[in-house]
Image (cartoon, rainbow, N blue to C red):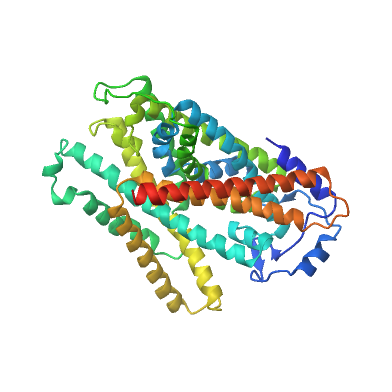
Length: 471
């Protein structure tokens, strides 16, 4: 699991793998829009500077970094894992696919940290921009905005699904034909969004992030515990039809790829985490992300396996919807998930809005420190537009599985394509008379990541458009 950091550090000590595409002071980038041309980059590559372990006073500890990375990985995708195991053809196929993809997921996190050191940047999009160039950087920013937009839609769908079950339990499982207007799914999503989500999304800074982290981890762990507990001790109210099935063909295994990519995608958040660490070292970071991904693997696998064994091929796209409405422990899990989503939506919206704002300022050649009144008007307009569009789409998209199948392909871009492109560009930018075996190994690995990412993105996105959305 540690061959990538070993090769990267070995390449760095050969005297040619470090170049600075930005000058920075601490965590504040200076002249961030500047791009080095090929000549400047080549001159910098000849510098005798070798990478060293850096220490940041007051930075994030190793345990804190593990917690943040786990929190970034665990989220709404957890609810879809039992259905993903069913789509893949069973427990064995789902676990094997996770383990194979986890190798690329962990090495992608290590590659991003190495590239962040190389270009002295501390955000995902700026690392891609510094290593791969301005055009690729802009394309990455657009995809981040689309991904966060799609995730916000999924959050609204989760709110509607869980509130529908909670209200049904409180009203003694009302029949579909006898649901009052105030318990209608579309009304509950709308009123919850207006009263809670929108006010939390309007501020310029998001101060609730520290509370959201605790709620998200607590909520997802509780959901996993409930699913495992109900699998071990099922109640009589659970559906009796829980027949499992095997994959109809090996291609069916790829049905679970969007959910796995969506679930483990923490790469966009990982770069700032690495930049805030007390000890910034590739090997140390490799241990941290491996530990974090193993924790996420246990949580996702526990939920996926037990949920699939409990409900079989009849499992819902949101596993909590497969449980009876009057199950009290499950009702508590639904309340936890709603709280997690209410606090996570503003954070995802903030990230997407920041990307949109950066693109707007860059293409209109405006300065970031402008008049506060103009900035406030533009921020309110951007927030309202984002909120209304995600809300409307959530009202007319039937289940979370369709959204995850679409944005899961985008997650593959952040996990495979962009880290692979960064690694390829970093290796090709080195000036060496004779290429070492480790140089060729890393270059081939980067090409493999990009090829696999393009295949996953094409396959999952095509299926999502023509089968899930149009079919």
